[in-house]
Length: 275
Figure 1 (cartoon, helix red, strand yellow):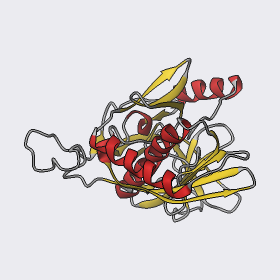
Figure 2: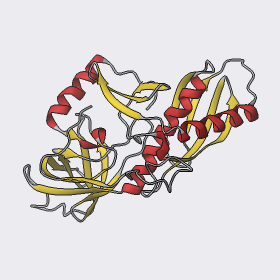
Figure 3: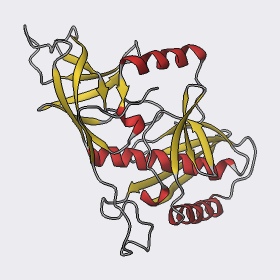
């Protein structure tokens, strides 16, 4: 998410939600599993069972970022945010008949597709990094998507002339330099709103998942730059580093003393987060 403003009513809802459902992905992008309990449950008119969990590791679609995929027990789930602000997991393969809806308090173990989570985090962080550099040129951000294969950030350009080849070359150069510098990416709360910062470059309200430093990015590249009707659409690609070298800058993968990022699980008392 880039440059999204939150109304006071939305902020209040998110503060209330923080008390009711803990969003572990906001505290730790790399949490992969959680042992938790059902907080709410129900069944759609179509018969599909849904649950909302006390400790949630699933990012729902929003802010330009796709939803996570994963499992509750042995059942595949689809994450979404409902009208009340809860992250709800639809369970299309669950028994929708009598007795098929888990009651609140039921224990559950959840897991996410970690490869997909890493990709989403890399694309989202790369989108913030792109915005940091383009914003320095005086362009105003007006939209974005961080979906794989179609990631982009849009800018208002009015009648400015754009040398697309030169801009592509410069942005790719800046990407490489920032990744090599392993610039930290952090999140904190400012007046109750979560803000994601790329140290010294960029800070925006955001509810998405991100890498913890830029050395975790790979192959950050401009895919296309299109200018039409007063808007510039900058398409980009990015990947997440492998587990082995995720915390080691490019060119230093064989240097000893680096602690690689590890998949993390949370059991018992989990990390807490809020929106």
